[in-house]
Image (tube, rainbow, N blue to C red; front, side, top):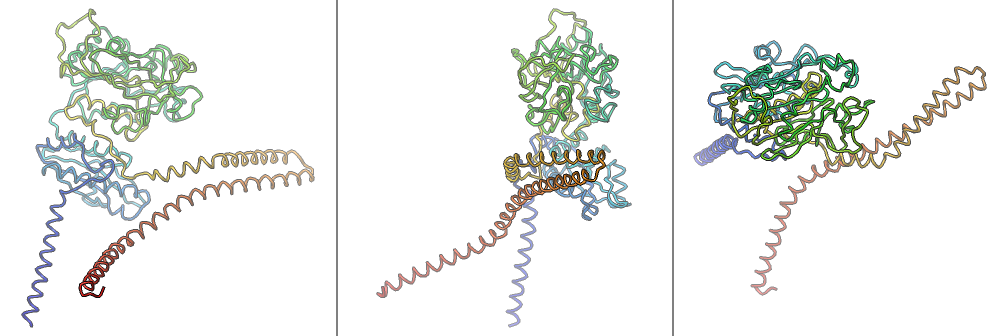
Length: 612
Protein backbone atom coordinates (compact mmCIF):
# COMPACT_ATOMS: atom_id res chain seq x y z
CA UNK A 1 0.00 0.00 0.00
CA UNK A 2 2.85 2.38 0.88
CA UNK A 3 4.65 1.56 -2.36
CA UNK A 4 1.49 2.30 -4.30
CA UNK A 5 1.05 5.66 -2.57
CA UNK A 6 4.71 6.49 -3.20
CA UNK A 7 4.31 5.76 -6.88
CA UNK A 8 1.23 7.98 -7.04
CA UNK A 9 3.04 10.86 -5.29
CA UNK A 10 6.06 10.41 -7.56
CA UNK A 11 3.82 10.52 -10.62
CA UNK A 12 2.10 13.67 -9.36
CA UNK A 13 5.44 15.37 -8.70
CA UNK A 14 6.75 14.41 -12.13
CA UNK A 15 3.60 15.69 -13.83
CA UNK A 16 3.86 18.98 -11.90
CA UNK A 17 7.55 19.31 -12.79
CA UNK A 18 6.89 18.62 -16.46
CA UNK A 19 3.98 21.09 -16.49
CA UNK A 20 6.02 23.82 -14.81
CA UNK A 21 8.98 23.27 -17.15
CA UNK A 22 6.73 23.31 -20.21
CA UNK A 23 5.05 26.55 -19.14
CA UNK A 24 8.44 28.19 -18.50
CA UNK A 25 9.84 27.08 -21.86
CA UNK A 26 6.72 28.14 -23.72
CA UNK A 27 6.74 31.54 -21.97
CA UNK A 28 10.35 32.17 -22.98
CA UNK A 29 9.92 30.86 -26.50
CA UNK A 30 6.63 32.67 -26.92
CA UNK A 31 8.13 36.11 -26.34
CA UNK A 32 9.22 36.15 -29.95
CA UNK A 33 5.78 35.02 -31.10
CA UNK A 34 3.86 38.30 -31.09
CA UNK A 35 0.98 39.54 -33.16
CA UNK A 36 0.08 43.23 -33.27
CA UNK A 37 -3.70 43.31 -33.53
CA UNK A 38 -4.07 47.08 -33.08
CA UNK A 39 -5.67 48.91 -36.00
CA UNK A 40 -2.72 51.26 -36.57
CA UNK A 41 -0.08 48.65 -35.58
CA UNK A 42 1.22 50.96 -32.86
CA UNK A 43 3.42 48.23 -31.35
CA UNK A 44 5.13 47.35 -34.65
CA UNK A 45 8.26 49.04 -35.97
CA UNK A 46 8.40 50.65 -39.39
CA UNK A 47 10.70 49.52 -42.17
CA UNK A 48 13.15 52.40 -41.69
CA UNK A 49 13.46 51.63 -37.98
CA UNK A 50 14.23 48.00 -38.81
CA UNK A 51 16.97 49.21 -41.17
CA UNK A 52 18.50 51.23 -38.34
CA UNK A 53 18.34 48.19 -36.04
CA UNK A 54 19.95 45.99 -38.69
CA UNK A 55 22.77 48.52 -39.14
CA UNK A 56 23.84 48.56 -35.48
CA UNK A 57 27.45 47.45 -35.17
CA UNK A 58 28.12 47.97 -31.46
CA UNK A 59 26.08 47.58 -28.25
CA UNK A 60 23.68 50.28 -27.11
CA UNK A 61 22.14 50.60 -23.65
CA UNK A 62 18.74 52.23 -23.22
CA UNK A 63 17.86 53.42 -19.72
CA UNK A 64 14.18 54.14 -19.19
CA UNK A 65 13.77 56.28 -16.08
CA UNK A 66 10.24 56.09 -14.67
CA UNK A 67 9.21 57.10 -11.15
CA UNK A 68 6.99 54.10 -10.56
CA UNK A 69 6.74 54.80 -6.83
CA UNK A 70 5.40 58.31 -7.44
CA UNK A 71 3.00 57.09 -10.13
CA UNK A 72 1.54 54.42 -7.81
CA UNK A 73 0.58 57.07 -5.28
CA UNK A 74 -2.16 58.06 -7.68
CA UNK A 75 -1.62 61.77 -8.22
CA UNK A 76 -4.17 62.95 -10.79
CA UNK A 77 -1.54 64.82 -12.79
CA UNK A 78 0.49 61.62 -13.27
CA UNK A 79 -2.26 59.26 -14.37
CA UNK A 80 -1.82 60.22 -18.02
CA UNK A 81 1.77 58.94 -17.84
CA UNK A 82 0.84 55.50 -16.52
CA UNK A 83 -0.58 54.08 -19.77
CA UNK A 84 2.08 55.91 -21.76
CA UNK A 85 4.83 54.23 -19.74
CA UNK A 86 3.39 50.80 -20.58
CA UNK A 87 3.33 51.72 -24.25
CA UNK A 88 6.90 53.06 -24.27
CA UNK A 89 8.16 50.03 -22.33
CA UNK A 90 6.57 47.59 -24.79
CA UNK A 91 7.84 49.61 -27.75
CA UNK A 92 11.40 49.60 -26.38
CA UNK A 93 11.19 45.84 -25.83
CA UNK A 94 10.31 45.53 -29.50
CA UNK A 95 13.42 47.59 -30.34
CA UNK A 96 15.54 45.25 -28.21
CA UNK A 97 14.08 42.12 -29.81
CA UNK A 98 14.81 43.48 -33.30
CA UNK A 99 18.39 44.53 -32.54
CA UNK A 100 19.97 41.04 -32.55
CA UNK A 101 21.24 41.54 -29.02
CA UNK A 102 22.75 44.98 -29.69
CA UNK A 103 20.24 46.88 -27.51
CA UNK A 104 19.96 46.34 -23.77
CA UNK A 105 16.94 47.81 -22.02
CA UNK A 106 17.12 48.85 -18.37
CA UNK A 107 14.10 50.21 -16.47
CA UNK A 108 15.04 52.41 -13.50
CA UNK A 109 12.87 53.83 -10.70
CA UNK A 110 14.66 57.02 -9.55
CA UNK A 111 13.40 57.40 -6.00
CA UNK A 112 13.97 60.54 -3.99
CA UNK A 113 17.60 61.10 -2.85
CA UNK A 114 18.72 57.81 -4.39
CA UNK A 115 21.68 57.01 -6.60
CA UNK A 116 19.25 56.53 -9.48
CA UNK A 117 17.86 60.06 -9.02
CA UNK A 118 21.36 61.54 -9.05
CA UNK A 119 22.03 59.58 -12.24
CA UNK A 120 18.84 60.95 -13.84
CA UNK A 121 19.86 64.52 -12.93
CA UNK A 122 23.34 63.90 -14.33
CA UNK A 123 21.82 62.85 -17.67
CA UNK A 124 19.74 66.04 -17.76
CA UNK A 125 16.30 64.50 -17.30
CA UNK A 126 13.61 67.04 -16.49
CA UNK A 127 11.51 66.19 -13.39
CA UNK A 128 7.85 67.04 -12.92
CA UNK A 129 7.11 68.55 -9.49
CA UNK A 130 4.51 66.65 -7.47
CA UNK A 131 2.79 67.14 -4.13
CA UNK A 132 5.30 67.51 -1.33
CA UNK A 133 9.02 67.36 -2.01
CA UNK A 134 8.92 64.41 -4.42
CA UNK A 135 9.75 64.60 -8.12
CA UNK A 136 8.48 62.53 -11.03
CA UNK A 137 10.92 61.43 -13.75
CA UNK A 138 10.01 59.90 -17.09
CA UNK A 139 12.82 60.07 -19.62
CA UNK A 140 15.00 57.93 -21.85
CA UNK A 141 18.81 57.86 -21.95
CA UNK A 142 21.03 56.17 -24.53
CA UNK A 143 24.67 55.29 -23.86
CA UNK A 144 27.26 53.54 -26.01
CA UNK A 145 30.52 51.82 -25.19
CA UNK A 146 32.35 54.74 -26.84
CA UNK A 147 31.00 57.22 -24.29
CA UNK A 148 28.33 58.83 -26.45
CA UNK A 149 25.17 59.86 -24.62
CA UNK A 150 21.81 61.13 -25.82
CA UNK A 151 18.67 61.73 -23.81
CA UNK A 152 15.00 62.55 -24.13
CA UNK A 153 14.53 64.64 -20.95
CA UNK A 154 10.79 64.05 -20.72
CA UNK A 155 8.67 61.50 -22.56
CA UNK A 156 5.48 63.48 -22.94
CA UNK A 157 2.18 61.84 -23.95
CA UNK A 158 1.76 64.79 -26.33
CA UNK A 159 4.46 63.22 -28.53
CA UNK A 160 3.01 59.71 -28.47
CA UNK A 161 2.43 59.68 -32.21
CA UNK A 162 6.10 60.64 -32.72
CA UNK A 163 7.51 58.19 -30.15
CA UNK A 164 9.05 55.81 -32.70
CA UNK A 165 10.51 58.74 -34.62
CA UNK A 166 12.12 60.22 -31.49
CA UNK A 167 13.58 56.89 -30.33
CA UNK A 168 14.87 55.85 -33.76
CA UNK A 169 16.37 59.28 -34.36
CA UNK A 170 18.17 59.10 -31.01
CA UNK A 171 19.61 55.65 -31.77
CA UNK A 172 20.59 56.60 -35.32
CA UNK A 173 22.17 59.87 -34.21
CA UNK A 174 24.21 58.22 -31.46
CA UNK A 175 25.47 55.35 -33.61
CA UNK A 176 26.18 57.24 -36.84
CA UNK A 177 29.85 57.91 -37.38
CA UNK A 178 29.50 61.29 -39.09
CA UNK A 179 26.90 64.02 -39.31
CA UNK A 180 25.61 65.43 -42.55
CA UNK A 181 26.60 69.02 -43.34
CA UNK A 182 23.96 71.63 -44.10
CA UNK A 183 24.82 75.09 -45.37
CA UNK A 184 22.51 77.92 -44.30
CA UNK A 185 22.37 81.08 -46.39
CA UNK A 186 20.21 83.60 -44.54
CA UNK A 187 19.79 87.34 -44.91
CA UNK A 188 18.16 87.68 -41.44
CA UNK A 189 19.03 86.66 -37.89
CA UNK A 190 16.14 84.42 -36.85
CA UNK A 191 17.35 84.16 -33.25
CA UNK A 192 16.82 87.91 -32.78
CA UNK A 193 13.55 88.11 -34.69
CA UNK A 194 11.06 90.44 -32.97
CA UNK A 195 7.66 91.53 -34.20
CA UNK A 196 6.37 95.11 -34.35
CA UNK A 197 3.59 96.07 -31.97
CA UNK A 198 0.88 95.92 -34.63
CA UNK A 199 1.91 92.45 -35.76
CA UNK A 200 2.19 91.26 -32.17
CA UNK A 201 -1.38 92.35 -31.49
CA UNK A 202 -2.55 90.39 -34.53
CA UNK A 203 -0.65 87.29 -33.35
CA UNK A 204 -1.91 87.49 -29.78
CA UNK A 205 -0.59 88.59 -26.38
CA UNK A 206 3.00 87.83 -25.52
CA UNK A 207 4.18 87.15 -29.06
CA UNK A 208 6.16 90.33 -29.75
CA UNK A 209 9.66 89.43 -28.63
CA UNK A 210 11.75 86.28 -29.09
CA UNK A 211 9.98 83.30 -27.56
CA UNK A 212 12.09 80.18 -27.45
CA UNK A 213 14.64 79.07 -30.03
CA UNK A 214 13.99 79.28 -33.73
CA UNK A 215 13.08 76.21 -35.75
CA UNK A 216 16.73 75.95 -36.84
CA UNK A 217 18.00 75.12 -33.34
CA UNK A 218 16.84 71.44 -33.28
CA UNK A 219 18.94 70.85 -36.40
CA UNK A 220 22.17 71.45 -34.47
CA UNK A 221 21.93 68.13 -32.62
CA UNK A 222 21.42 66.23 -35.88
CA UNK A 223 23.58 68.04 -38.43
CA UNK A 224 26.70 70.12 -38.76
CA UNK A 225 25.35 73.56 -39.62
CA UNK A 226 27.51 75.96 -41.60
CA UNK A 227 26.54 79.61 -42.04
CA UNK A 228 27.25 80.61 -45.62
CA UNK A 229 28.31 83.95 -47.01
CA UNK A 230 26.92 85.10 -50.39
CA UNK A 231 30.16 84.00 -52.07
CA UNK A 232 30.62 80.70 -50.21
CA UNK A 233 31.59 77.45 -51.92
CA UNK A 234 28.64 75.05 -51.99
CA UNK A 235 30.63 71.97 -52.89
CA UNK A 236 30.71 69.07 -50.42
CA UNK A 237 27.48 70.20 -48.74
CA UNK A 238 24.79 67.57 -48.24
CA UNK A 239 22.03 70.19 -48.41
CA UNK A 240 21.66 73.96 -48.66
CA UNK A 241 18.98 76.02 -46.92
CA UNK A 242 18.20 79.52 -48.18
CA UNK A 243 16.25 81.74 -45.76
CA UNK A 244 14.68 85.02 -46.91
CA UNK A 245 16.58 85.27 -50.25
CA UNK A 246 16.44 89.03 -50.68
CA UNK A 247 18.74 90.84 -53.12
CA UNK A 248 21.11 87.89 -53.61
CA UNK A 249 24.01 88.71 -55.94
CA UNK A 250 24.25 87.08 -59.35
CA UNK A 251 27.25 85.03 -58.25
CA UNK A 252 25.21 83.45 -55.44
CA UNK A 253 22.31 82.69 -57.79
CA UNK A 254 24.71 81.06 -60.23
CA UNK A 255 26.25 78.95 -57.46
CA UNK A 256 22.81 77.76 -56.31
CA UNK A 257 21.86 77.00 -59.91
CA UNK A 258 24.97 74.87 -60.45
CA UNK A 259 24.50 73.13 -57.12
CA UNK A 260 20.93 72.02 -57.91
CA UNK A 261 21.56 71.02 -61.52
CA UNK A 262 24.48 68.86 -60.35
CA UNK A 263 22.20 66.85 -58.05
CA UNK A 264 22.10 68.99 -54.91
CA UNK A 265 19.35 69.29 -52.31
CA UNK A 266 17.94 72.78 -51.74
CA UNK A 267 15.37 74.09 -49.24
CA UNK A 268 14.02 77.62 -49.75
CA UNK A 269 12.06 79.74 -47.27
CA UNK A 270 10.85 82.83 -49.10
CA UNK A 271 8.21 85.32 -48.06
CA UNK A 272 6.36 88.25 -49.65
CA UNK A 273 6.11 89.93 -46.21
CA UNK A 274 8.44 88.66 -43.47
CA UNK A 275 6.75 90.25 -40.47
CA UNK A 276 9.81 90.11 -38.16
CA UNK A 277 12.14 91.72 -40.71
CA UNK A 278 14.01 94.73 -39.23
CA UNK A 279 13.40 96.60 -42.48
CA UNK A 280 9.68 96.05 -42.01
CA UNK A 281 9.87 97.32 -38.43
CA UNK A 282 11.68 100.44 -39.62
CA UNK A 283 8.90 101.09 -42.10
CA UNK A 284 6.55 101.61 -39.14
CA UNK A 285 3.74 99.52 -40.64
CA UNK A 286 2.41 96.08 -39.96
CA UNK A 287 2.41 95.38 -43.69
CA UNK A 288 4.87 96.87 -46.12
CA UNK A 289 4.88 96.25 -49.86
CA UNK A 290 8.58 95.84 -50.58
CA UNK A 291 10.99 95.92 -47.58
CA UNK A 292 9.79 92.66 -46.01
CA UNK A 293 9.56 90.62 -49.20
CA UNK A 294 11.89 88.04 -50.71
CA UNK A 295 11.75 85.35 -53.36
CA UNK A 296 13.96 83.13 -55.48
CA UNK A 297 11.83 83.35 -58.61
CA UNK A 298 14.93 83.84 -60.79
CA UNK A 299 15.64 80.13 -60.27
CA UNK A 300 12.39 78.58 -59.11
CA UNK A 301 10.23 79.92 -61.95
CA UNK A 302 12.30 77.97 -64.47
CA UNK A 303 11.85 74.82 -62.35
CA UNK A 304 8.07 75.06 -62.16
CA UNK A 305 7.37 77.03 -58.98
CA UNK A 306 6.80 80.77 -58.72
CA UNK A 307 5.60 83.00 -55.88
CA UNK A 308 3.68 86.22 -56.41
CA UNK A 309 5.53 89.08 -54.73
CA UNK A 310 2.39 91.11 -53.99
CA UNK A 311 -0.04 88.50 -52.63
CA UNK A 312 -0.60 86.85 -49.25
CA UNK A 313 -2.47 83.66 -48.43
CA UNK A 314 -5.57 83.94 -46.25
CA UNK A 315 -8.11 81.42 -44.99
CA UNK A 316 -10.74 82.11 -42.30
CA UNK A 317 -11.14 78.36 -41.73
CA UNK A 318 -7.52 78.04 -40.55
CA UNK A 319 -7.32 81.20 -38.46
CA UNK A 320 -6.78 80.36 -34.76
CA UNK A 321 -8.88 83.34 -33.75
CA UNK A 322 -11.20 85.79 -35.46
CA UNK A 323 -9.03 88.86 -36.15
CA UNK A 324 -10.39 92.16 -37.30
CA UNK A 325 -8.42 91.94 -40.52
CA UNK A 326 -7.92 89.06 -42.97
CA UNK A 327 -6.97 85.61 -41.73
CA UNK A 328 -3.27 85.63 -42.68
CA UNK A 329 -2.14 84.01 -39.41
CA UNK A 330 -2.90 80.38 -40.25
CA UNK A 331 -2.69 77.16 -38.26
CA UNK A 332 -2.49 74.35 -40.81
CA UNK A 333 -4.04 71.09 -39.62
CA UNK A 334 -5.54 67.94 -41.06
CA UNK A 335 -6.09 68.14 -44.83
CA UNK A 336 -4.03 71.35 -45.03
CA UNK A 337 -0.90 69.22 -44.39
CA UNK A 338 -0.98 67.38 -47.70
CA UNK A 339 2.29 65.51 -48.17
CA UNK A 340 2.13 63.29 -45.08
CA UNK A 341 3.47 60.29 -46.98
CA UNK A 342 6.56 62.23 -48.12
CA UNK A 343 7.94 64.24 -45.23
CA UNK A 344 5.01 65.43 -43.15
CA UNK A 345 4.44 62.21 -41.18
CA UNK A 346 3.50 62.97 -37.61
CA UNK A 347 2.85 66.67 -38.14
CA UNK A 348 -0.11 67.96 -36.15
CA UNK A 349 -0.05 71.65 -36.94
CA UNK A 350 2.10 74.15 -38.82
CA UNK A 351 1.78 77.89 -38.19
CA UNK A 352 2.43 80.45 -40.91
CA UNK A 353 2.06 84.23 -40.93
CA UNK A 354 1.43 86.26 -44.08
CA UNK A 355 2.65 83.44 -46.31
CA UNK A 356 2.83 83.79 -50.06
CA UNK A 357 0.98 81.98 -52.82
CA UNK A 358 2.93 79.42 -54.84
CA UNK A 359 1.96 78.73 -58.44
CA UNK A 360 3.03 75.40 -59.92
CA UNK A 361 3.38 74.75 -63.62
CA UNK A 362 4.51 71.53 -65.32
CA UNK A 363 8.17 71.29 -66.37
CA UNK A 364 9.51 68.27 -68.30
CA UNK A 365 11.62 66.03 -66.08
CA UNK A 366 10.49 67.62 -62.81
CA UNK A 367 7.74 66.23 -60.56
CA UNK A 368 5.94 68.61 -58.19
CA UNK A 369 4.22 67.47 -54.99
CA UNK A 370 2.19 69.81 -52.79
CA UNK A 371 3.15 69.68 -49.10
CA UNK A 372 1.17 72.50 -47.48
CA UNK A 373 -1.91 74.39 -48.62
CA UNK A 374 -4.98 76.17 -47.33
CA UNK A 375 -8.47 74.69 -47.44
CA UNK A 376 -10.90 75.27 -50.29
CA UNK A 377 -12.06 78.43 -48.49
CA UNK A 378 -8.65 80.04 -48.97
CA UNK A 379 -7.94 83.13 -51.02
CA UNK A 380 -5.19 85.66 -51.68
CA UNK A 381 -5.05 89.28 -50.51
CA UNK A 382 -2.83 92.20 -51.42
CA UNK A 383 0.49 92.35 -49.57
CA UNK A 384 0.37 96.14 -49.21
CA UNK A 385 -3.30 96.16 -48.16
CA UNK A 386 -4.48 92.82 -46.71
CA UNK A 387 -8.03 94.17 -46.45
CA UNK A 388 -8.28 93.87 -50.24
CA UNK A 389 -8.75 90.45 -51.81
CA UNK A 390 -7.15 89.89 -55.20
CA UNK A 391 -10.12 87.86 -56.46
CA UNK A 392 -13.62 86.89 -55.39
CA UNK A 393 -13.08 83.16 -55.92
CA UNK A 394 -12.20 80.71 -53.16
CA UNK A 395 -9.58 78.03 -53.73
CA UNK A 396 -6.77 76.14 -52.02
CA UNK A 397 -3.60 78.25 -51.92
CA UNK A 398 -0.32 76.29 -52.11
CA UNK A 399 2.17 77.17 -49.36
CA UNK A 400 4.74 74.39 -49.69
CA UNK A 401 5.91 72.21 -52.57
CA UNK A 402 8.59 69.60 -53.29
CA UNK A 403 10.26 69.43 -56.71
CA UNK A 404 12.25 66.34 -57.74
CA UNK A 405 13.88 65.18 -60.95
CA UNK A 406 16.55 66.36 -63.38
CA UNK A 407 16.91 70.14 -63.26
CA UNK A 408 18.22 72.20 -66.16
CA UNK A 409 20.03 75.46 -65.54
CA UNK A 410 17.72 78.41 -64.91
CA UNK A 411 20.48 80.90 -65.80
CA UNK A 412 21.64 79.67 -69.18
CA UNK A 413 23.51 82.48 -70.87
CA UNK A 414 23.96 84.37 -67.60
CA UNK A 415 27.22 85.32 -65.86
CA UNK A 416 29.32 82.41 -64.65
CA UNK A 417 32.07 83.13 -62.16
CA UNK A 418 33.21 79.55 -61.59
CA UNK A 419 34.04 77.58 -64.74
CA UNK A 420 34.00 74.30 -62.80
CA UNK A 421 30.48 73.07 -61.95
CA UNK A 422 29.94 72.26 -58.31
CA UNK A 423 29.50 68.51 -57.99
CA UNK A 424 26.33 67.55 -56.14
CA UNK A 425 25.92 64.57 -53.88
CA UNK A 426 24.00 62.53 -56.41
CA UNK A 427 23.81 63.87 -59.95
CA UNK A 428 20.43 63.43 -61.62
CA UNK A 429 18.59 63.14 -58.27
CA UNK A 430 18.07 66.77 -57.40
CA UNK A 431 15.38 67.92 -54.99
CA UNK A 432 14.10 71.38 -54.14
CA UNK A 433 11.63 72.08 -51.33
CA UNK A 434 9.98 75.51 -51.32
CA UNK A 435 7.97 77.16 -48.53
CA UNK A 436 6.34 80.56 -48.97
CA UNK A 437 6.86 81.76 -45.39
CA UNK A 438 9.87 82.77 -43.28
CA UNK A 439 7.94 83.63 -40.11
CA UNK A 440 7.32 79.91 -39.55
CA UNK A 441 11.01 79.58 -38.55
CA UNK A 442 10.96 82.23 -35.81
CA UNK A 443 10.76 81.40 -32.12
CA UNK A 444 7.19 82.64 -31.49
CA UNK A 445 5.85 80.60 -34.41
CA UNK A 446 7.94 77.45 -33.89
CA UNK A 447 7.31 77.23 -30.13
CA UNK A 448 3.52 77.16 -30.45
CA UNK A 449 3.23 73.37 -30.92
CA UNK A 450 4.96 71.03 -28.42
CA UNK A 451 4.86 68.16 -30.89
CA UNK A 452 4.48 67.84 -34.63
CA UNK A 453 4.95 71.56 -35.32
CA UNK A 454 7.17 73.85 -37.37
CA UNK A 455 10.46 72.52 -35.98
CA UNK A 456 9.44 68.93 -36.75
CA UNK A 457 8.52 69.97 -40.29
CA UNK A 458 11.99 71.43 -40.87
CA UNK A 459 13.75 68.43 -39.34
CA UNK A 460 11.68 65.97 -41.38
CA UNK A 461 12.38 67.98 -44.53
CA UNK A 462 16.13 67.73 -44.02
CA UNK A 463 16.00 64.03 -43.19
CA UNK A 464 13.98 63.29 -46.32
CA UNK A 465 16.63 65.03 -48.43
CA UNK A 466 19.87 63.89 -46.83
CA UNK A 467 19.20 60.11 -46.40
CA UNK A 468 20.26 57.33 -46.70
CA UNK A 469 17.93 56.41 -43.84
CA UNK A 470 14.93 58.70 -44.14
CA UNK A 471 13.50 58.93 -40.66
CA UNK A 472 10.83 61.23 -42.06
CA UNK A 473 9.21 58.20 -43.69
CA UNK A 474 8.47 56.73 -40.27
CA UNK A 475 4.73 57.11 -40.15
CA UNK A 476 3.01 58.70 -37.20
CA UNK A 477 1.84 56.19 -34.65
CA UNK A 478 -1.83 55.72 -33.90
CA UNK A 479 -3.19 56.92 -30.62
CA UNK A 480 -3.03 54.49 -27.68
CA UNK A 481 -6.17 56.16 -26.31
CA UNK A 482 -8.85 55.66 -28.94
CA UNK A 483 -11.79 58.07 -29.07
CA UNK A 484 -15.35 56.83 -28.64
CA UNK A 485 -16.34 57.80 -32.17
CA UNK A 486 -19.81 56.21 -31.89
CA UNK A 487 -20.49 58.21 -28.73
CA UNK A 488 -19.16 61.37 -30.39
CA UNK A 489 -21.55 60.87 -33.30
CA UNK A 490 -24.46 60.31 -30.90
CA UNK A 491 -23.63 63.51 -29.04
CA UNK A 492 -23.32 65.44 -32.32
CA UNK A 493 -26.75 64.22 -33.46
CA UNK A 494 -28.21 65.14 -30.08
CA UNK A 495 -26.63 68.61 -30.21
CA UNK A 496 -27.93 69.15 -33.75
CA UNK A 497 -31.45 68.15 -32.70
CA UNK A 498 -31.38 70.39 -29.62
CA UNK A 499 -29.51 73.31 -31.22
CA UNK A 500 -32.64 75.35 -31.91
CA UNK A 501 -34.01 74.86 -28.39
CA UNK A 502 -30.64 75.69 -26.81
CA UNK A 503 -30.28 78.84 -28.92
CA UNK A 504 -33.79 79.93 -27.94
CA UNK A 505 -33.11 79.36 -24.23
CA UNK A 506 -29.79 81.20 -24.41
CA UNK A 507 -31.49 84.12 -26.15
CA UNK A 508 -34.17 84.13 -23.45
CA UNK A 509 -31.50 84.19 -20.72
CA UNK A 510 -29.66 87.03 -22.46
CA UNK A 511 -32.88 89.04 -22.80
CA UNK A 512 -33.75 88.50 -19.14
CA UNK A 513 -30.25 89.57 -18.07
CA UNK A 514 -30.55 92.72 -20.15
CA UNK A 515 -33.90 93.37 -18.49
CA UNK A 516 -32.27 92.93 -15.08
CA UNK A 517 -29.58 95.42 -16.02
CA UNK A 518 -32.15 97.95 -17.14
CA UNK A 519 -34.12 97.50 -13.91
CA UNK A 520 -30.95 97.95 -11.85
CA UNK A 521 -30.21 101.25 -13.58
CA UNK A 522 -33.82 102.34 -13.14
CA UNK A 523 -33.78 101.53 -9.41
CA UNK A 524 -30.80 103.83 -8.93
CA UNK A 525 -32.54 106.69 -10.69
CA UNK A 526 -36.03 106.39 -9.15
CA UNK A 527 -36.85 107.12 -5.52
CA UNK A 528 -40.59 106.64 -5.22
CA UNK A 529 -41.67 103.54 -3.30
CA UNK A 530 -44.32 102.57 -5.86
CA UNK A 531 -41.75 102.45 -8.61
CA UNK A 532 -39.41 100.48 -6.37
CA UNK A 533 -42.09 97.84 -5.83
CA UNK A 534 -42.65 97.66 -9.58
CA UNK A 535 -38.91 97.29 -10.17
CA UNK A 536 -38.68 94.58 -7.49
CA UNK A 537 -41.56 92.67 -9.10
CA UNK A 538 -39.88 92.95 -12.50
CA UNK A 539 -36.59 91.68 -11.08
CA UNK A 540 -38.26 88.63 -9.56
CA UNK A 541 -40.01 87.90 -12.83
CA UNK A 542 -36.77 88.20 -14.83
CA UNK A 543 -34.84 86.06 -12.34
CA UNK A 544 -37.56 83.42 -12.55
CA UNK A 545 -37.23 83.40 -16.35
CA UNK A 546 -33.46 82.96 -16.08
CA UNK A 547 -33.78 80.16 -13.52
CA UNK A 548 -36.38 78.32 -15.61
CA UNK A 549 -34.31 78.62 -18.80
CA UNK A 550 -31.17 77.41 -17.01
CA UNK A 551 -33.09 74.43 -15.63
CA UNK A 552 -34.24 73.53 -19.13
CA UNK A 553 -30.65 73.82 -20.41
CA UNK A 554 -29.45 71.60 -17.57
CA UNK A 555 -32.20 69.10 -18.41
CA UNK A 556 -31.01 68.98 -22.02
CA UNK A 557 -27.42 68.36 -20.92
CA UNK A 558 -28.64 65.72 -18.46
CA UNK A 559 -30.55 64.04 -21.27
CA UNK A 560 -27.36 63.82 -23.34
CA UNK A 561 -25.41 62.36 -20.43
CA UNK A 562 -28.23 59.90 -19.69
CA UNK A 563 -28.22 58.77 -23.33
CA UNK A 564 -24.47 58.09 -23.23
CA UNK A 565 -24.63 56.43 -19.82
CA UNK A 566 -27.47 54.16 -20.95
CA UNK A 567 -25.35 53.05 -23.90
CA UNK A 568 -22.42 52.28 -21.60
CA UNK A 569 -24.76 50.43 -19.21
CA UNK A 570 -26.14 48.25 -22.01
CA UNK A 571 -22.65 47.33 -23.17
CA UNK A 572 -21.52 46.61 -19.61
CA UNK A 573 -24.48 44.27 -19.12
CA UNK A 574 -23.74 42.61 -22.45
CA UNK A 575 -20.05 42.16 -21.62
CA UNK A 576 -20.64 40.99 -18.05
CA UNK A 577 -23.42 38.56 -18.95
CA UNK A 578 -22.31 37.61 -22.44
CA UNK A 579 -19.16 35.80 -21.31
CA UNK A 580 -20.80 33.67 -18.59
CA UNK A 581 -23.76 32.98 -20.88
CA UNK A 582 -21.41 31.73 -23.59
CA UNK A 583 -19.56 29.57 -21.06
CA UNK A 584 -22.85 28.04 -19.92
CA UNK A 585 -24.25 27.72 -23.43
CA UNK A 586 -21.33 25.67 -24.74
CA UNK A 587 -21.52 22.82 -22.19
CA UNK A 588 -25.33 22.93 -22.41
CA UNK A 589 -25.12 22.42 -26.16
CA UNK A 590 -22.64 19.56 -25.68
CA UNK A 591 -24.90 17.97 -23.05
CA UNK A 592 -27.96 18.32 -25.28
CA UNK A 593 -26.06 16.75 -28.15
CA UNK A 594 -25.04 13.81 -26.01
CA UNK A 595 -28.61 13.38 -24.74
CA UNK A 596 -30.02 13.33 -28.27
CA UNK A 597 -27.28 10.93 -29.35
CA UNK A 598 -28.07 8.67 -26.39
CA UNK A 599 -31.77 8.72 -27.18
CA UNK A 600 -31.00 7.88 -30.80
CA UNK A 601 -28.86 4.92 -29.77
CA UNK A 602 -31.62 3.76 -27.39
CA UNK A 603 -34.16 3.92 -30.23
CA UNK A 604 -31.93 1.88 -32.53
CA UNK A 605 -31.40 -0.79 -29.86
CA UNK A 606 -35.13 -0.93 -29.13
CA UNK A 607 -35.91 -1.22 -32.84
CA UNK A 608 -33.51 -4.14 -33.18
CA UNK A 609 -35.21 -5.88 -30.27
CA UNK A 610 -38.59 -5.35 -31.87
CA UNK A 611 -39.92 -2.97 -29.27
CA UNK A 612 -40.52 -0.18 -31.83
